[in-house]
Every structure is written in C-alpha cells, then in structure tokens.
Amino acid sequence: MAKILIVGCGAIGSELAGILSAKGHEVTGLKRNPPTSTATNIKYFTADISSPADLVDLDTDFEQTFFIVSPDSRNEKSYRGVYETGLNNLLARLPDAHWLMVSSTSVYGQSQGEWVNEDSVAEPDNITSRLIRQAEQRLMALNPANIIIRFSGIYGPGREHLLRMARQAPEIQQTPPYFTNRIHQRDCVGVLSFLLDQRLAGVPLKQCYLASDDAPAPMWEVMSWLAERLHCQPPTAKAADDNAGMNKRCSNAQLKALGYQFQYPSYKDGYLELTGKE
Image 1 (spheres, rainbow, N blue to C red):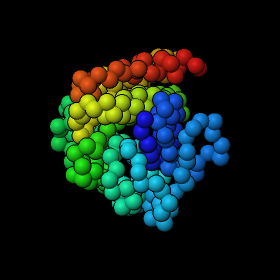
Image 2: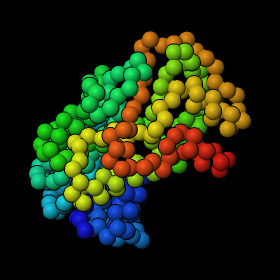
Image 3: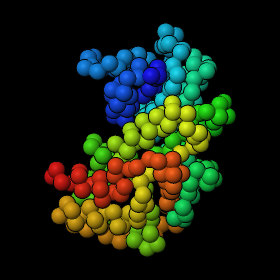
Image 4: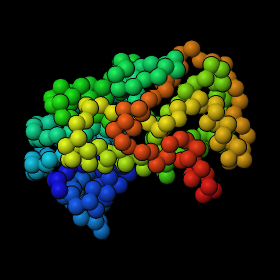
C-alpha cells in the first residue's frame, strides 16, 4: 500500500481520501482548516500552501501526491496563490514527489464548438486559466510520471448551479448551439482513484487525461430538459454571442480506452438523481 498526500481536501479530496484509506493506503490530507474529528484513518496536516513556514514539518516520503486545490476567489491573486506560489512551495518541500494534478478544461481556448482532446492546443485567453496551464506545464516538465487530469464542469450534491439557473427561465443561445461539458463529482473521485490504481499496478499511463462525461450537449438542450424535470418555465432564446468563450466539446476517449467506466455517462443520469429528490 502507498503513502499518499492529498493537497486540498474539499468535497472531492475528502471523498477520495476516504476511498483510498478504505483500500489500505496511508493517507494524509493537507488542509488549512481540517475537521476537528474524523472516524476514518485519514491523518490531517494543517497548512496554507502559500506559506513555506507552514510546510516545514510536512513529511517528504509520500509515494503519490494529489494536487486538488480550489482558489478562494476567481481572480488572479487567488490563482497565483495556489497554482504558482503554493505549488512552488510544495515542490521545494517535495522535490521527488509523483504528482496527480487536478486541472480544468478551461485551459482550452477553443470557442466554436470544436471537439478537443488531450492533444488539442491549450492556450487559454484569461489569466486564471493561463495560471492553471502554467502549473500543468511545470509539473509535466519536471517528471514524465506526473499526470494532469482535466475536469470539465463539476456537478453533484452541493454543486447545483444549473438547477438554480433553470428555475429562472434564463435566456440561452439556441442557434448556433453553445456546447457545455460536465462530470459528476462522484466520477471525479472515481477517475482519480482509478488512475492511482493503474499507476500502482504498473500500467503505462499518459501525462494528461481529459475527464468529462460521454455527452457534451448544447446549453439550450440541457436547460430545456431541466426545466421540464423541475416543472418550471423553459428558457427563452437569445441572439448568438460571437464572443462567447468556452464553447467546445470534450472527448473522454483516451480515459475510456484505459478502462474507466463512468457512473454518470450523461447529464441526464446525474440530474435525474438530483431532481428526483425534489
């Protein structure tokens, strides 16, 4: 079994820690404000990764390190704090670590509904996505064994933005279609656990995996389906926005070829469960 560090124990990191601990791994979760008590075998290390002094007593012999961070705000300062300063501090403390970094499909700048995969150009326009991309490049250049996992829009319990949006009869671009991509939170955890299992089993892995469900779909289609499920007013069509970004379709073919099976293959599978509770 492996000694594992999870940097960032929010919803995804905490659930992953529980699964890996149950498999017999020795898991440490690095978090600024860890829970005061836990019924599992997970150890917690209290630290702010932007402060080198906080990391002085962190063990250095972890066999695998997950980097699953969430900036406090959607601004340049917050993103630099974790993807630049924080990562630099961790690399100084853990120079020999093997990394699995959670990234985002926001690193793709494509905006015309194109299909993208791991080999597609990743040159985002906005500064926050560029900082994520720079962190990716840093880790990939350091060690060919480091792995980047790019998640698309995460949804699930507690991540119900689209449900709130659907209830407001929003204006949505209908023609041409504005494509969106999703992954259920449980599949995020499933992908990370799966990739670790493959690595520990000695399976040859790529340096980058795009993790998104099987069904990229136009936002108009998604909102219309949700409105019907929620018994609320459907969306109204708005004029096409020539400057709309993030309009792309994400391919998960490489991840599925490795053997991962999605628990929620489409948005309907995940939102049927969420809306069924209402």
